[in-house]
Amino acid sequence: MAQPLQPLNIAAPAFKGLNTQDSPLSGDPQYASVADNVVVDSYGRIGSRRGLNLLTVDYTELGSDKIHVLHEYEDANGNLKIFSIGNGKVLSGTTTLVDETPASYTITEPHFQITNFNDHCYFFNANHEPLVYSTALGAVTKMSAVSGASGTPPQGAAVLGAYGRLWVGGIDGEPNMVYWSDLLAGHKWDTGTAGSLNLDKVWPDGSERVVALSAWNGYLVIFGYNSIVLYQGAESPATMNLVDTIVGIGCVARNTVKLTGTDLLFMSARGVMSLGRTIQEKSAPMRDISKNVRDDVIQLWKSQDEEIYAAYNAKYSFYLLSFPTQDVVYCFDVRAPLENGSFRVTRWLSPDMYCFKTIQNDDLLVGHEGGISRYEGYTDIGQPYTMRYYSNPLSFGNPTSLKFLKKITPTIIGGAAGTFSVKWSYDFGTDYKAQTYTLGGSTIAYYNVSEYNDAEYTAGVQVTSPRINCTGSGNLVTIGLEAPINGAPLSLQEFNIQATTGRIY
Image (cartoon, rainbow, N blue to C red; front, side, top):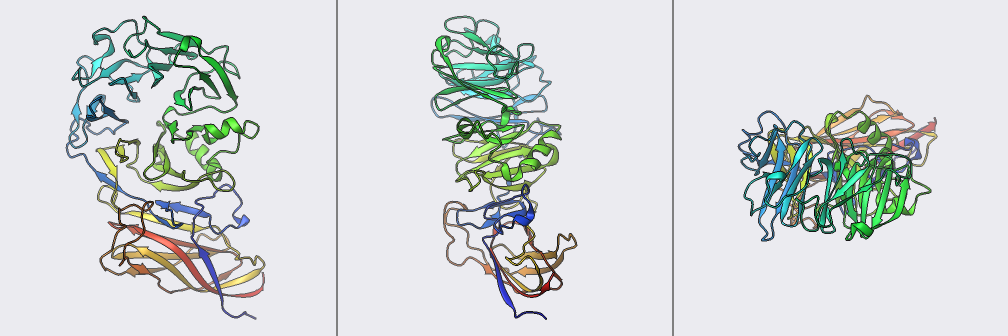
């Protein structure tokens, strides 16, 4: 015999983000099995991510290729210039892409690493001679053509401007070598205090290849594929000393190494790692910040045909990890770790997010086919995108009883005139029942500074709480919501559910 109607509640759905790693029966309703094209705001709501506002009007020089690399150069007077690589060219600008490739310089491999150092911008690639740009030079120039250049510069895949000089590694034929330039002279490689370091006997787990370089917490950090070594005193490299080695964890993709202010994040063969926590927890290296989606992330990495890119943005407090082959981006909220040490994570789906660059004003630029976009607004280059949330199968604390859903009342904040669908299924079923609701067309009041993370709603924001009639029954219940995002943000506050319970299942 059915029991009286009971209220059930999912407060702050997906507040803890995705969890596809643990058994769905472990049952925390604040995890989600699907959280697509959303972020988790500082008030615990999942809301639609921002979209892509296309900046490029003239992409003639890019042709049918995509932007492979983005970089912002700033000179000593604060002048800014955006560089990118695409269609075998060094390009500049955002609105109109201008070819700045030096004469008689042919780019066959587009994945340069670009760094600013001592009022210059340096372009490095393992397959090409390094390039240099500065306001004084006035043009992108081969390093060998720069006045005062000396020595043969290393052609490396990894470059770092830090501790008063350039550092280069990832050199074909010299996988264990790191070279450094003369002091404050990134174009001088055989004079003054220029030198090199052979890591062949330093790697803790045998010979490696230098994958990435970084400066963090006073250390020179050298990433191999399976190991990490840290040097101190890099201001005087001839006398710098090895202070730590980490075995069993390395970096698999140079462009995933990002400073977050207090930490250094990178993609390893075991997931996304925090260098600070890796040093502290050598005995438990599997406690990575991508723990809740680890298998998914590793599988995507293994099936990649293209470079993996990452970005850190302090304005939005996230670390983005892009897998372009699958058109998937994972968004890690870095504000605070969860109780298991991982970061909250959601997933973005878009074919137009290839590479990223956070620029000086904290805007996030995105490179893709057709040019450069800025992360803003609520369409992807003028097209709507779909926000999706699905819970894990829920027992509502009573795993043995049959549930008969009667009504679902979501609380939806914001949105524009349009529709959204509430969906539900039982017992791991994929044949979802659904009801579609039409949002009102009232004017939406945006956040005070148009940021989910920074401010409260202003008065007059649209709040929608429709009562959705439900059918069916089962032991476990999965609740979902899908909504097209087309010009206005939308967030999900909670699900209120009315159900009856029946016999023991």
